Length: 255
Ligand SMILES: [Zn+2]
Picture 1 (cartoon, rainbow, N blue to C red):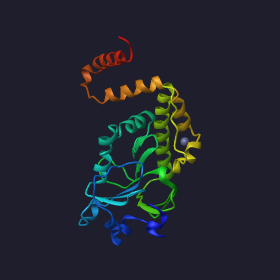
Picture 2: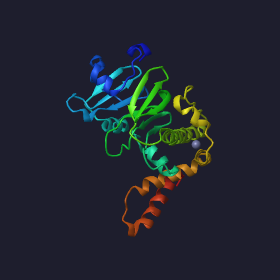
Picture 3: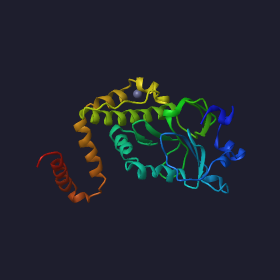
Picture 4: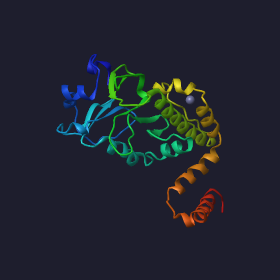
C-alpha cells in the first residue's frame, strides 16, 4: 500500500465503512502475515456483512467474515506456534495482560484485552509514530499512511513497552538458539516502533536480557511452562511432574 492509495485521508474503521474502500478488495484465503498493519474489529457494526477489515501493505484493504479473534487464532494453523511463545515469555517475564502475538519481529498488539473478545490489532514493526487522543490511537505507518484505531483505556506507551519487551525476548531466544548452531539471526533493518524501546535500559529490560543469556535455562523453563499446563491433579502433581521432567531430560541426552 502506498501513501497515494488513500490520498491524505486518515484511515479508520468508520472511514472505511463509510467510504466503501473495502469494495476494491475481495474475500479470500487470507493469512495474517508480516505485511498486516492493522486488523480492525467491526463485528459490532452488525449488518456490514463482515467482521474484520485488514489493512495490508501489499493487498491493501481486505474484508473478511472471520472475527479478529478467529484471524489471530488462525496464525497457529500457519506457523503451528501461535501464541505459545508469547504466553510462555509473558508468564516468565511477569507480563499479565494484553498478551500480544509474538514471534520475533512478527508481533501484533491488541488494543484491548483479547482473551475473550474481538479487538483491533496493530503491528508495531510497521508503525513509525503513535499518539493517543480522545480514546483513539493515531498512527503513522513506516510508509507514511495515517491510520486510527480505538484505544479505549490504558497507557499506550507503557503497554507498548511490555510488547517490545516480549518482542525482544522472543528474538533473543531464537537468536541464541541459532547462534549455537553457527547461524546468525539478523533483525529487520527498520524496527519501526520497536526502535526506541530497544534502547530502554529499565530494570525489566535488563532482567530480560540477563535471563535470555542462558539458553539451556530458557528451554527448561519452557518445558516447565508446558508441563504445568497439563492440569494434573494436585495430589499427584509433584510426583508426576518429576517423572515427566526426567523423561523430557532424556530426550536431550543420549539415554
Ligand atoms: Zn524497559
